[in-house]
Length: 437
Image (cartoon, rainbow, N blue to C red; front, top):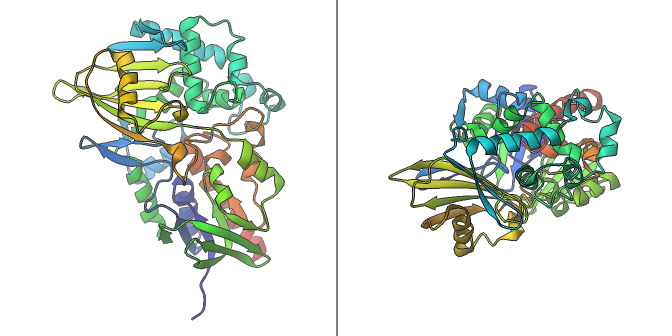
């Protein structure tokens, strides 16, 4: 029996890998998808909580994000809106643990003021945000931390707390580590508009869930697939690539697309080794220590939102669903999971009661992406000094091509960035195979 040699092996069945596979299949190429998990989606996933589907990973989408919006249009998916507007109650938890009950209108205005001051140079720095390094000042400012810039703005107590909570959420680390311009780029991508950006991150999700959108792309591409076994080694030769799985099976292809979360690359043996620039990026660039949490409270709390400044363990606590019969489901985004034991129900309940008083916490559903062996980080938040080096990770190495949202020019912590990168590598491989074969 003659061994099959694929045109491309795609490692990873998240959005970037699925889109890359579909693009290549549409060109008439033979494709094998290899996924360590027993499911599609990567760092996006839908599970059930109290009989309701909930997103426990990446979920924010918006029509200002062109790549994911195009996929939603292609496969007929609409938008599901979270109850973020028209708040009944809003709270701010300061760094020292003090809790302030803030009128919702004041909460919004203080946050927007802080955000617009922080991103005040977004149009100047990123006039074409999909070419983020065109302005040479961006690379210089990459050495500036988000906290350093934040402290230069003369913000009041509420403004500082809300913006630092937001930045901790995005950085998955103390804001002294997060690259200042890496966050400002998101504001530029949202048409330099703060409300549009906020809607893109917290308000709109895929109607039907990210699982369903992934399945639609997978069904469309009709690639061969192997699920449930991680890749152990990738060997590159002059005439092709051999991928070895943990169960010692091998597969061969003319090219290979790697779409792994950056910290997972260290689990794979590369021959020849990856170049120094990539290894340095893999080791140092990303830092998101995040997790997702849903909590069921017996009482109907209404439509609420809370920002919690670092080092409080929760960063954003928002109402997901509520009524008198249900009580309340709270969705909690955690930038630094290391600040709380997510397996400790009492610790979770204590944090909820700090904000919402003597409520009865009934159930909790955590998902810790930082401890997921196939993720290691919740999203590709860029450490100061490394945002300007993301092209090192995106650069092809011979027959190896690299995707994943960390390599995106645009929305690098989002589904949109993952899809963008999958489209890019599909194009890169098409050009490569024209020249090489």
